[in-house]
Image 1 (tube, rainbow, N blue to C red):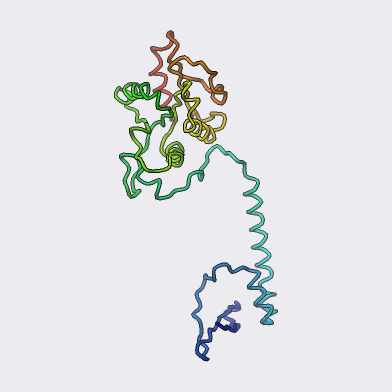
Image 2 (image 1 turned 90 degrees about the vertical axis):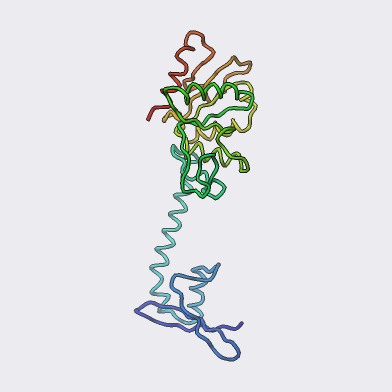
Length: 251
């Protein structure tokens, strides 16, 4: 469809209005401020103005275009210099409809989300100990609220997306139930590393390792620098649940 461009000056600002030729009759296309065709660029605009012979408009725009380009390049440079991991990762998990209504008490339309004191990272073979943890921390005077995947999360969505959403935005702490079976779990590995990325060096006491039975393998190296709750030590076992509860109740 042939088009012709006619320049129009208004209040010292140059505007281009395209007239579409239909059936031999020119029609003025309505001007929509703030809108431009998809894929349009500043370079294309300057090229059109140059072909129209509007050197006056090019002169007027030169300063503004140069300033905008400098700001754009500066912003891109700042983004490139950002560290891969920061203490508070705010955009690691995008907010999508998939992350609405992911727990049993969530509002399905996203107007209300369930919040927990701690996310429990565990593998299926350690579920019996997790059930004991529920009894000791939720059904006693501590009255903590734990996020247990098999109990609280609805089926049907991506495990890793849900885990990231819960650990980062819904849970104040994360308890890691460490065992030989835990070391073989890809899900537990992801959850642990994700939580550590939110608090490098455990500065915010976000992650609490728990050892509840003896292990044949070495304790995971990424958790060795964090103080653990050891259920296997008979001398301190009577203080185990109180210590764990108090650590989860910290502000």
